[in-house]
Length: 422
Ligand SMILES: CC(=O)N[C@H]1[C@@H](OP(=O)(O)OP(=O)(O)OC[C@H]2O[C@@H](n3ccc(=O)[nH]c3=O)[C@H](O)[C@@H]2O)O[C@H](CO)[C@@H](O)[C@@H]1O
Ligand SMILES: C=C(OP(=O)(O)O)C(=O)O
Picture (cartoon, helix red, strand yellow):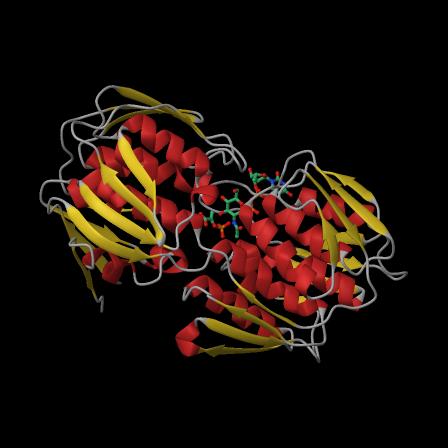
């Protein structure tokens, strides 16, 4: 299996282009199932998760053509030939569950494998199920699959989520676009990926208001048309690369970055002593003089500090002056990077959902591996400023969420190589 070798090499300088958001694209692609007409996504990221969603949509009979080296996805769901999302595909990627709402709305029935948990937590689907049931769906769990039907079609309703789940908001939002009457989603997720999905659905003819707030209103329509939509910039890839000069020193401009996508994160960078400036082309990040300062971080739904940047932020705080407390409030098991960072010389105590990080002067390279995407990239970031070589295994996690990671970091002066495995 491939490995990535990073050698701490001093300051970084240059530009890093930010790709379209994985998590937006994974919700936008299933929206093709809602319409007989073509949906084209531009600015799509080139990632293994996008290939998995392509495979899933194709298994349902959709046509998905990847153009311009994968940055454009031309999709058509004119003739759907299956309503079954098979375990073999769904188990590879949880976001596969986002085909449930659209298929139910378009076809009146859907069978979707339950994805199961993953390294970061149990991740049940109860909120998706309750939301769709409120719209009139009948859903049963049999043989590991959710069997959903809406014999009389879906009907608009008020759905109040007990937690602002991103995936449940997306699934029920998509289903409600074709339901009869008005649906109101209360305590809806406010993430930029939800706004991007609603924007695309509006281009397809959906009537949606309030996305980006915690109350979204959807007036169902009879049919949706085709559309062309650019995928919003990836705020998690953006935050990750903003941390590269923060950790290693120097100045890096993240092209396509926007402050409104990373507000809470930038506030913490500022408190830690990292300067962020909005430019015409994106966000320029520079480490101010002196040592990084400790800061406390609590993960929350948007607009709070994102859980998907918690591991990377921990990598920064490992060498801060003082003690930082990180509280993970979204997933119950998202500190798997901590023991690996400790192998690199970090001082971290984890108790339940709280990690206490006492800064050390410098980390030292070591062989490391991680069990999830963001944990893996946090080890690469830590390696950028560590003394000696950091050798990361299980790099396939990174291919899920970071296109051209080695090339992008090399472009700003990092010493990083990917070694092909047998
Ligand atoms: C593909 C995608 O967009 N993934 C993102 C999405 O995941 P995802 O959509 O899975 O995240 P959710 O917002 O649904 O999950 C947040 C929390 O709610 C719980 N929950 C969720 C649904 C449910 O029915 N029942 C329930 O208890 C989860 O277990 C978790 O503890 O949002 C997360 C939170 O910002 C991000 O970390 C993921 O990167
Ligand atoms: C947790 C993530 O993704 P997923 O929801 O696909 O597991 C992530 O992108 O950090």
